[in-house]
Image 1 (cartoon, protein in one colour):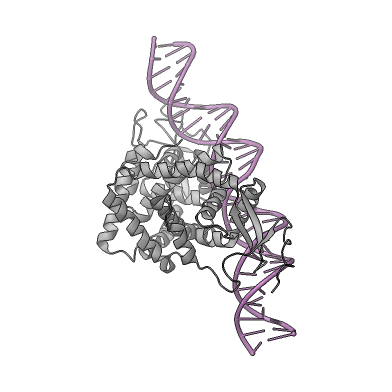
Image 2 (cartoon, helix red, strand yellow):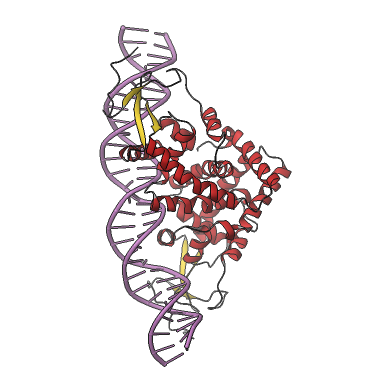
Amino acid sequence: MAGRAAAKRGTGKAEALNVGWQPGERVLHGLLLEAILKDNPIPVAYRMNYIANFYVGPLVAMMERSFKLTRSEWIVLFCLTRRPRLNAQQISIVTGRPKTSIASAVKLLQKKGLITRKTDIADSRRRVLHLSESGQATYAAIIKSFVEREKQMLETLDPAERRELVRLFGKIIAAADAWAKPY
Amino acid sequence: MAGRAAAKRGTGKAEALNVGWQPGERVLHGLLLEAILKDNPIPVAYRMNYIANFYVGPLVAMMERSFKLTRSEWIVLFCLTRRPRLNAQQISIVTGRPKTSIASAVKLLQKKGLITRKTDIADSRRRVLHLSESGQATYAAIIKSFVEREKQMLETLDPAERRELVRLFGKIIAAADAWAKPY
DNA sequence: ACTAATTAGTACGACATCGCACTATATACC
DNA sequence: GGTATATAGTGCGATGTCGTACTAATTAGT
């Protein structure tokens, strides 16, 4: 209908082009995704990143909205729950995130009263972190969503498949020294 | 040695504390990680995110340094290589990233001459994107590192295990409609 | 002991990311 | 055909993230 006229407008830099699909036709998420997965040069890495993003993305968004926590703050909270008395450096190393990011998260968490920071007597460079009461409560409230979402994500796999997935991940992580280094 | 004196300094807010390990003793990456993986409430999700981060993080850092491309720009480049003539909206949907992020990446890529933008004749709201010559060249240069790193990451798995990993990922992705939704 | 190298943490600045509000075009419905 | 709704994209402001450069404390080497 529009024909020639509607072209060469917009930002001015765009030229007109006729794409394959018709106006009414919409290319759905699933079809697009299939096309992107097919003959993908990094079949494992792409699929893994895709799943990881769609798993954690909405969770982080929810956390920022409902709990006013950033992703980095959550990482610190999570690590300290798993293993109290870590310092910022250790969290940085084990998560692969820059230490300045961890440091700013620590500062925020401390201001909110979710963690405490004490100087290590044996090495006064270290500031030893651990969760406060309210930090533990916040963690408990948030982790539920993570667990629930993982459950939903794995619903399509049977128990043996889930075990196999963990086993394969375990092998890759165990060999991390050989491949996970920076450039 | 320092004993009592060195405490209560630093930022002033930190109190002194004696942690479990001795000054000389260093807790290594592997040991820390093991402790964090043990009895993890989200065993699959944590391992997957860990691997995904250590796979893609250094690659993105390298890209920013060597090619002056952001992660979002790379995502656009990658999607357009897999399937030309997408528009920004479609890339946003299929990658799960906010459309404003894709939009700014598109603007940068266009300024650098790596992609072109043409208005769709059939629907003048759409700006159809595709790679320029130099865009293709840039992609080709970068993708090598991704392929190589995936190869290293999977070196510990035998061919059957690799196929199984792809198969399991495939099942999870195929069921994405059921679990990957936002809150 | 004294210096060099390593490790923990901080300060600061640049910028990518992202949510929100807005415009423009297209489709649906009556 | 005219209005309402959905879709594509933009502008802008806030802020989280991260690299660089720095200080403080500890360890190693001689």
